[in-house]
Image (cartoon, rainbow, N blue to C red):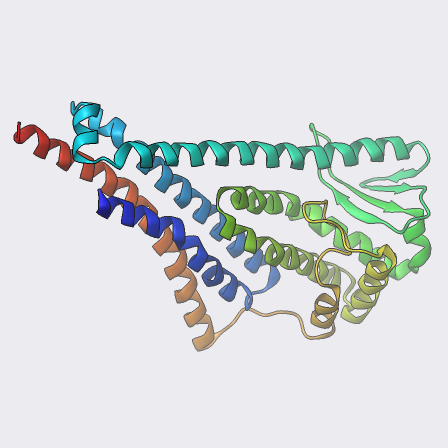
Length: 316
């Protein structure tokens, strides 16, 4: 049983090492690929964490399936039942946290749709763009809800701040959030963070990469990186404080100076040569190692209980 606990302990601690291992190679990839790596790493580490806890939680039940009474299990392995109960409690806490975060995420979108609907009477709707009458400079991507398509919501205050060409940059940026389903990617990492606290460290990195993804899409759309940088900087400064974590994708999200500096440089390229191979190997090792460790732990615990049950049965 000690060996099983050691394996599970290593799995539960794995995300603390896995998060830097995922974040590092993501930092040298283009924004779209970097976002995919961050989301995949977060979801994988959350799945492994749940698998480890489920495997630990089911140890007594597997023993019973092997026809070993609870009393004998507790006599031979005194820590089994308390540890299994602790794993079950953690799973219950995680389930509650996941439900709470999912409801909060849905509430954010529903509230934004309600406000957009209320403002639509005083605004102008043109295709996928809703211009609301509000002196506060605001712009954000509103994902679809209950079958409705996504919308780009822009206030009249924001339109007054920007010139015609800069408005096109802003709209291209927000449309990239919608077409890339950035809200869904952000929600996945937020939910994964409810499973393991270490995974929460990928949230800010993902927000930055999603904004950079939308920035590059706007630059490609307009064909002018300097204009894109100037427009997004002006819009972000006009909005004032950055949006709160977990809010809808908005132009002011993420460290704006870093985003502007990246736009003033050349378009991001995939690493090539030795750097590309080293990064690919590091990323593949991190993700495949995490997946293999989770599967091995679940299978190993099951086999361990079966072996122990056979030994107990033979010793009677």
